[in-house]
Image 1 (cartoon, one colour):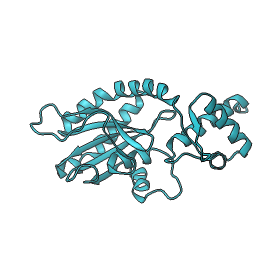
Image 2 (image 1 turned 135 degrees about the vertical axis):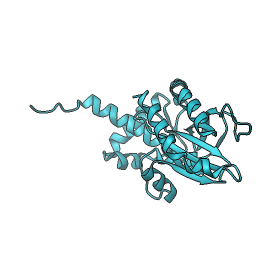
Image 3 (image 1 turned 90 degrees about the horizontal axis):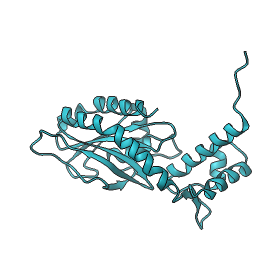
Length: 226
């Protein structure tokens, strides 16, 4: 029996969603030509896709001709982030207690990694923490690296991002908080913005054993959202 082929409408929708993903994950936006090349479609098709996304304010064309994230994504992101927080909270609470360290959930916002939820270990007498809403540049710190690693490989990306994508987690020392270890694992869910679980601690022995339970926790969260 011949397998069903995707309809023209389904293919257009898939291309449009992929174009949106490409634009929102690009640090400095993308031109029509760049979207055309990455989707492997004619420039006119890429132009129509971007124009439609712009009509719904999901992307916006800047004066330099590059398309960047539009304000319309904020309303969508609010609902998505609420769902993500609800799914992640019980897993993060358990993980923070088991590892005795602060666990945070971070997402991409423009060119920054932003803390969506922070969970401290309940029994620890001293913890390293930060506020929900705290941000730092993508590519910096374990969370910034992991969020970039959650996306597809891109030409010229940093070696630590490629390494984190290959091994499934990022580990850094002192890049955001002096003297602190960070370990972060991407949460990759098709159709949802990039997110990651991040552990931060001053204790090397905790950081050294954190990767495996963080990966397992990220998989548990992803499983509730697919």
